[in-house]
Length: 171
Image 1 (cartoon, rainbow, N blue to C red):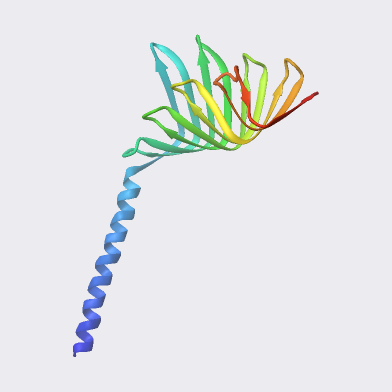
Image 2: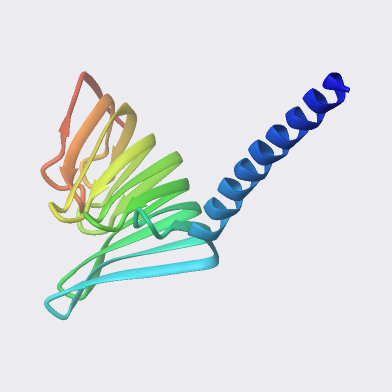
Protein backbone atom coordinates (compact mmCIF):
# COMPACT_ATOMS: atom_id res chain seq x y z
CA UNK A 1 0.00 0.00 0.00
CA UNK A 2 2.80 2.44 0.89
CA UNK A 3 4.47 1.49 -2.39
CA UNK A 4 1.30 2.38 -4.37
CA UNK A 5 1.06 5.78 -2.62
CA UNK A 6 4.71 6.46 -3.48
CA UNK A 7 4.13 5.66 -7.17
CA UNK A 8 0.95 7.76 -7.17
CA UNK A 9 2.81 10.73 -5.61
CA UNK A 10 5.68 10.29 -8.05
CA UNK A 11 3.27 10.32 -11.03
CA UNK A 12 1.58 13.49 -9.75
CA UNK A 13 4.94 15.26 -9.40
CA UNK A 14 6.10 14.02 -12.81
CA UNK A 15 2.85 15.13 -14.46
CA UNK A 16 3.09 18.60 -12.94
CA UNK A 17 6.70 18.95 -14.05
CA UNK A 18 5.83 17.87 -17.59
CA UNK A 19 2.82 20.16 -17.78
CA UNK A 20 4.96 23.11 -16.63
CA UNK A 21 7.57 22.41 -19.29
CA UNK A 22 4.86 22.13 -21.96
CA UNK A 23 3.41 25.42 -20.78
CA UNK A 24 6.84 27.09 -21.14
CA UNK A 25 7.17 25.73 -24.69
CA UNK A 26 3.70 27.02 -25.57
CA UNK A 27 4.43 30.42 -24.07
CA UNK A 28 7.61 30.60 -26.15
CA UNK A 29 5.67 29.70 -29.29
CA UNK A 30 3.16 32.44 -28.59
CA UNK A 31 5.89 35.07 -28.14
CA UNK A 32 7.53 34.12 -31.46
CA UNK A 33 5.71 35.28 -34.58
CA UNK A 34 6.27 33.48 -37.86
CA UNK A 35 6.16 35.78 -40.89
CA UNK A 36 6.36 34.63 -44.49
CA UNK A 37 7.75 37.22 -46.96
CA UNK A 38 8.87 39.59 -44.19
CA UNK A 39 9.55 43.21 -45.22
CA UNK A 40 10.61 46.11 -43.03
CA UNK A 41 11.91 49.57 -43.95
CA UNK A 42 13.57 52.29 -41.92
CA UNK A 43 12.72 55.92 -42.69
CA UNK A 44 14.51 58.79 -40.96
CA UNK A 45 13.61 62.46 -41.54
CA UNK A 46 11.18 61.33 -44.28
CA UNK A 47 14.05 59.64 -46.17
CA UNK A 48 14.30 55.88 -46.66
CA UNK A 49 17.60 54.67 -45.17
CA UNK A 50 17.35 50.90 -45.61
CA UNK A 51 14.95 48.02 -46.02
CA UNK A 52 15.15 44.33 -45.22
CA UNK A 53 13.40 41.40 -46.91
CA UNK A 54 13.30 37.76 -45.84
CA UNK A 55 11.59 34.69 -47.24
CA UNK A 56 10.78 33.58 -43.69
CA UNK A 57 11.21 35.47 -40.42
CA UNK A 58 10.67 34.67 -36.76
CA UNK A 59 9.95 37.77 -34.70
CA UNK A 60 10.47 37.56 -30.94
CA UNK A 61 8.31 40.48 -29.89
CA UNK A 62 9.32 40.49 -26.21
CA UNK A 63 12.96 41.20 -27.15
CA UNK A 64 12.23 43.12 -30.38
CA UNK A 65 14.55 40.85 -32.40
CA UNK A 66 14.04 38.69 -35.46
CA UNK A 67 15.74 35.88 -37.33
CA UNK A 68 15.49 35.57 -41.11
CA UNK A 69 16.08 33.05 -43.87
CA UNK A 70 17.29 34.28 -47.28
CA UNK A 71 17.94 37.83 -46.13
CA UNK A 72 18.34 40.91 -48.33
CA UNK A 73 19.17 44.40 -47.07
CA UNK A 74 19.16 47.44 -49.37
CA UNK A 75 20.83 50.65 -48.18
CA UNK A 76 19.78 54.05 -49.56
CA UNK A 77 21.22 57.57 -49.60
CA UNK A 78 19.46 60.62 -51.04
CA UNK A 79 16.71 58.39 -52.45
CA UNK A 80 19.13 56.12 -54.35
CA UNK A 81 20.10 52.53 -53.59
CA UNK A 82 23.81 52.55 -52.73
CA UNK A 83 24.30 48.98 -51.43
CA UNK A 84 22.75 45.55 -51.70
CA UNK A 85 23.47 42.83 -49.12
CA UNK A 86 22.38 39.21 -49.32
CA UNK A 87 22.94 36.20 -47.04
CA UNK A 88 21.54 32.79 -46.18
CA UNK A 89 20.32 34.06 -42.82
CA UNK A 90 20.11 37.19 -40.74
CA UNK A 91 19.53 38.32 -37.20
CA UNK A 92 18.23 41.79 -36.39
CA UNK A 93 17.87 43.88 -33.25
CA UNK A 94 15.17 46.45 -33.98
CA UNK A 95 15.87 48.58 -30.89
CA UNK A 96 19.29 49.64 -32.17
CA UNK A 97 18.89 48.85 -35.91
CA UNK A 98 21.76 46.40 -35.81
CA UNK A 99 21.94 43.31 -38.04
CA UNK A 100 24.10 40.25 -38.58
CA UNK A 101 24.19 38.50 -41.93
CA UNK A 102 25.50 34.94 -41.99
CA UNK A 103 26.30 32.36 -44.65
CA UNK A 104 27.37 33.21 -48.20
CA UNK A 105 27.26 36.93 -47.54
CA UNK A 106 27.41 39.00 -50.72
CA UNK A 107 27.50 42.80 -50.79
CA UNK A 108 27.60 45.04 -53.82
CA UNK A 109 28.26 48.76 -53.57
CA UNK A 110 26.77 50.59 -56.52
CA UNK A 111 28.48 53.87 -55.63
CA UNK A 112 31.97 52.33 -55.22
CA UNK A 113 31.68 49.52 -57.84
CA UNK A 114 32.85 46.98 -55.24
CA UNK A 115 31.74 43.40 -54.50
CA UNK A 116 32.35 41.80 -51.10
CA UNK A 117 32.12 38.13 -50.09
CA UNK A 118 32.27 36.77 -46.52
CA UNK A 119 30.58 34.33 -44.16
CA UNK A 120 29.51 36.78 -41.43
CA UNK A 121 29.14 40.56 -41.33
CA UNK A 122 27.63 43.05 -38.92
CA UNK A 123 25.64 46.04 -40.21
CA UNK A 124 25.11 48.92 -37.79
CA UNK A 125 22.59 51.10 -39.58
CA UNK A 126 22.65 53.82 -36.90
CA UNK A 127 26.35 54.46 -37.60
CA UNK A 128 26.02 53.47 -41.29
CA UNK A 129 28.85 51.03 -40.69
CA UNK A 130 29.65 47.44 -41.82
CA UNK A 131 32.34 45.22 -40.36
CA UNK A 132 33.53 41.64 -39.97
CA UNK A 133 36.34 39.67 -38.33
CA UNK A 134 35.93 36.79 -40.78
CA UNK A 135 37.72 35.98 -44.03
CA UNK A 136 36.62 38.50 -46.63
CA UNK A 137 37.17 38.77 -50.36
CA UNK A 138 36.69 42.16 -52.00
CA UNK A 139 36.74 42.88 -55.71
CA UNK A 140 37.19 46.52 -56.65
CA UNK A 141 36.07 46.63 -60.27
CA UNK A 142 36.97 50.31 -60.66
CA UNK A 143 40.64 49.65 -59.81
CA UNK A 144 40.67 46.04 -61.09
CA UNK A 145 41.98 44.77 -57.73
CA UNK A 146 41.13 41.81 -55.48
CA UNK A 147 41.77 41.98 -51.72
CA UNK A 148 41.62 38.98 -49.38
CA UNK A 149 41.59 39.86 -45.70
CA UNK A 150 40.87 38.61 -42.22
CA UNK A 151 38.08 41.13 -41.69
CA UNK A 152 37.30 44.72 -42.59
CA UNK A 153 35.35 47.81 -41.60
CA UNK A 154 33.69 50.33 -43.92
CA UNK A 155 30.85 52.75 -44.43
CA UNK A 156 27.61 51.07 -45.53
CA UNK A 157 28.40 51.85 -49.20
CA UNK A 158 31.83 50.16 -48.76
CA UNK A 159 33.64 53.49 -48.94
CA UNK A 160 36.45 54.23 -46.45
CA UNK A 161 37.14 50.50 -46.30
CA UNK A 162 39.92 49.33 -43.97
CA UNK A 163 41.22 45.76 -44.16
CA UNK A 164 42.76 43.62 -41.42
CA UNK A 165 45.64 41.25 -42.31
CA UNK A 166 45.19 41.43 -46.06
CA UNK A 167 46.80 40.55 -49.37
CA UNK A 168 46.11 42.46 -52.58
CA UNK A 169 46.52 41.34 -56.16
CA UNK A 170 45.92 42.97 -59.51
CA UNK A 171 43.31 41.23 -61.68
